[in-house]
Image 1: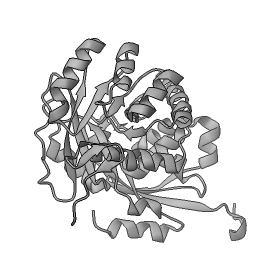
Image 2 (image 1 turned 180 degrees about the vertical axis):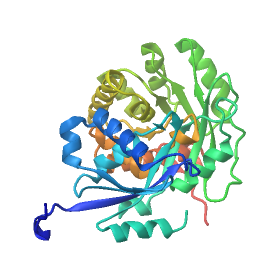
Image 3 (image 1 turned 180 degrees about the horizontal axis):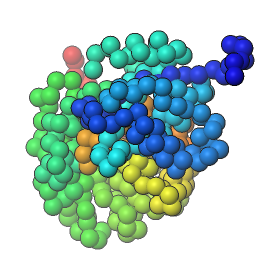
Amino acid sequence: MRLLPSLRGRKRYLAFRMLPDDADALSRRDLTLELDRSSQSLLGDAGSSECDFRVLSFDGTEGIVSCVHRETTRTRAVLATIYEIRDRRASIRVIGVSGTVKGAKRFFSEKR
Amino acid sequence: MMIRTRKFYDFSIHTAPECSDSPEAMAGIASGYGYAGIAITNHTPHQPQKPELTDHPGIAVYSGIEIVAKNPHHLMQMIRKHRAKVRVLSVHGGNEKINRAALESRAVDILSHPDERLNHVLMRFASENRVAIEFNLDSIIRMRGRARVRALTNFRHNLKLARKYGAPMILASNAQSIYDLRAPAEMIALGAIFGMAEDEAIAAISTVPEEIIRRGSENWIMEGVWVVTED
């Protein structure tokens, strides 16, 4: 349902990069499932709903997660507690936080 | 932002020969994450890392050791044996007697994963002897469910007492592979999970490790007194 732009909640977009960076085998769905599991165990239902994060894009190595603008710390913590995706070791590093998707995308072009 | 201007360190990292990843690989990843220095602290049957493996551009790799001792007497022997050889000396905690002996010794830099709720007496020792209490974030990262709840409650308790008695705190990854390393901002976020304020968390990965390194340098004489060289 459409909502007035002024009534939409404020968001932050977290650009992240995954290790290993050759993981073409991982899909957005794998990451979403693992993220749900991780937030479920760290924050529970109530905490996860407060953060309200979702995976906007993920190409196997880089992606963007959105969350409620005041909850970046907790979202970061949830991303940091991911240590295994589909039985393969992995770790996620947030490379930048922005208020717009466009701004978040800029972090990918910066140096590694 | 405060985060950008600081230097960050991770002082609890295990590498080859104890684990599979080489010190160079660890240093490379840590450097990419924005660390200024790491210490390789393998457990004691392994020898300390050769000092000054600092040919990596952009990151300092300090020699360290994590002492695993059977009893306090054994711990003291090990400290005497290794102290002069390493910059960062941490003690593999977890046992009540070992924890106490480690905190009573001035020669110890870090009490690694105490795994229990320390009391006011031990915390006061930690504060007087400047032994940093480690919060090993691998337990938050790797564990789930009840085990993690217990770890977090212990962290909360130790955090409260460390604040009260001014004991140094250190956040460390206790990494066993490159996938266990986390960037400084993630470490701070994980610290917030058990109630660590942002400035405390920043101190725990910057000023506290810096103090340890300063203490290990040859210009250091005693607490508050060191030789200032001109450069």
